[in-house]
Image (cartoon, rainbow, N blue to C red; front, side):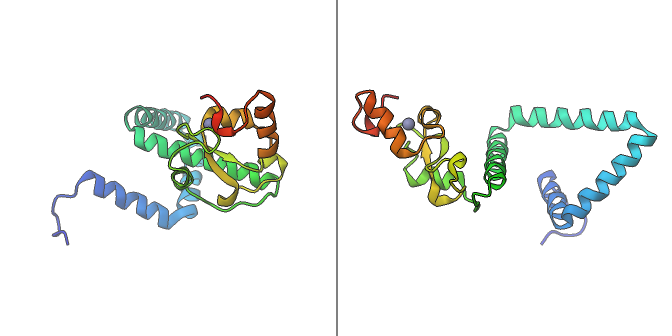
Length: 171
Ligand SMILES: [Zn+2]
């Protein structure tokens, strides 16, 4: 336990702030939105400044904290996939990209090169759900090449190119 009045490091303070924010959740956000709405009417300069400051903050954070930026990007990718799946009523269950990639030892299931993307075996556009059992780790090249094809169609195309196994695809 920390003694009263003892030094509190900035990181602890921030963690506490975000913890509260999480607990308060939507209410906190709604209060803030309300506050900013009022401010916009009475003090638009303040709002513009706050916005600029926020932009600057995130800009710097993206540039300086690559781990954070990657986490942020992964979350954005996940929510894009979820939206795509939900729009189509395909079904969705959350999963961790890292866990999917680890399942194939970080390798692309189609060619064996390092996997950097998540591929839907049955494409979302063909009714495939965004769930763990329908996704595999793939390299960007294979993922783009496969596109909205099923694995069978993808393999057939590889065969037509004189390739007999997906593992023979040149990176
Ligand atoms: Zn690949």
